[in-house]
Length: 433
Length: 143
Image 1: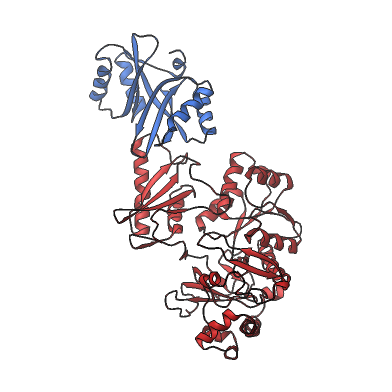
Image 2: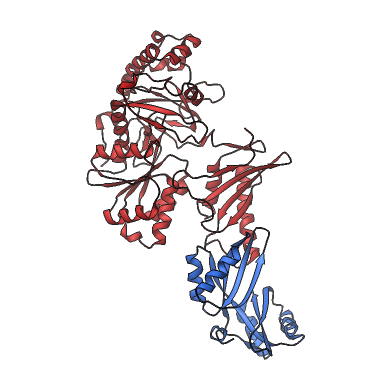
């Protein structure tokens, strides 16, 4: 039996969801036009008035918002409520440039926690569960989001934050954690460490909620097998609220977007034109219940597909695919678009660890790409010839997927730096920007 | 009849072999013979040691990737042509040698060669029939 945190909302008829979206969008647009000079200017520039927006069908008339807008308006330029109503800020990692901050009223936090609670219940979480949150706490939304969601569900929450693997494993064994929340790369690292320490039979995990970075199906199966759990994807971004903008149900076939709070669109990233469902393009979000920091048509840079087919889990909210690439992550090497996720897929298919690093460099105006991957006992052989063959096999597989030659270097185990937050997968030494 | 050799994956970077050898030294493992096969990126360190089980677990603790391979150890007179005679025999039998390395022990009259071939059993038989003494694992400690 599928369980829901807010059944009436999560399984609401489509007409009901559309009615919520129409009403909330109209009032949000009116509110930002009146209260936020930045939005007013943008809308005036495009010749759109709040009266032009009568339903969600009019969304396309509104201007887009990008991360650059958020930086330009930093820190208070997009605030839609007086500061006295705000109770917290969160911030992006600043991985792609200057940090961006988002503001929350108590009501905003409350709704955000609901979204995370939906994700935890969809992953099988109940008040009897022990939820170990090893996303970072602090400015990063991962820890606070899942922490709040876990409280709402009524689970016992372990606010571990990231790092200190020794202590993570100890608490996991001693307190019998059943749900693990962290980045997929840290989950993979934890799984390895648990097996190394021979404590696999001492853990009681049944589910994991992993997000905040790109990961593949192969990596999911790897973590699931090593930990004996079901691994659920969760998606979100600080600008929109944090984790829980969308989440996976037991079907593991895409993430349900919480459409009572967020309207999703897919656009052509070059022309800005809205694409029909099922087409691949850039995901754009409009938050329609946020008080302090509502964003209208925010371009996420994530490339996804939306799926409105009925989900067997009973939820009626649209599903988004796992992001297939991110224009921020995308590398252009020798003029070819390269996504780290493509490389990871090849390595996992060849039975290698998910610990790899991509180094891009340029010499004599020519790009080079090197993939460093750690040696494993399964891969190791006693003769140079066999190892060279293996390297060659991986090189060929990469070439057929990427379309360009990438040098493969096998390095010693544990020699690639593992960060306990986000994995540093790419080192670009070209300094092109 | 074959002897067991420990192979260690070694990245081509400063101090890599030293780390391995220091770990063995700290654990009191003695090395009788050693060879390195290398490419520009990595190397394979091959070792004949007095306590293979201990050496393997010490290196795994260090995070090294190791493997154990059966190789042939042959005793030969420590004179000019000692090794050539063995190789002549194997060539006649059309045995492909993947790699080899030789060492001498405290008894200076004898030297030893470690051979990695495709078919251990056939080569061992040929060598024994030609009168060569083959090393066993328990002989290693006495060298």
